[in-house]
Image (cartoon, rainbow, N blue to C red; front, top):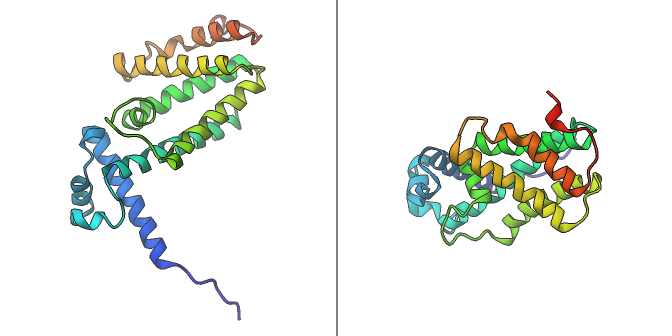
Amino acid sequence: MIALPNRDRRSERREATRREILNCAWQIARADGLAAVTLRGVADLMGMRAPSLYSHVASKNAIYDAMFGQAWREWSAALAAAALTAPAEPRRALLAAARLFVDFAAGDPARYQLMSQPAIPNFIPSAEAYAASLEAYAQMADALRGFGVTAPADIDLWTALITGFTNQQLANDPGGERWRGQLPRLVDMYCDEVGIAGPALRSSP
């Protein structure tokens, strides 16, 4: 007879409740904005009393913290999946990564605001949640190093350019192509600046 490992059903229930809390918080954020997330609102959506929520989360900022970490882990997963089919040519690979980031942000503006904008006054992610963003940064930096970009300032420049374009797109032409359509120009200018060779993207379809 094979002995099966004992299941920790209490931990499983707590993890399921934690996932439900996050799902409800995101539902509120996507419908009414990040600032609309409250313990009472999450509890109401879950069909439970607000005080009961304190046995799972210490505060509203704790919910934001979990959302922050989850958002960055989702981006890391998207980046890792895209790397499997990324173009070999560096400029095209960077263009694909830039488009992926803009589309990731545009697909869920509330998530992007929490990740990259000061959307919640006085919210500072915990070291654990912030580690997820550092892991995503390391993925991006490793990809750039693979193309010969090693100077920290050049890596920082890439993140500033991409997030700046993304902010402009979301703020001024949500759902459009005004800034996203200029990403080939952006990638060419960046590559010319940091010395990444290859055919110009602006001459390509």
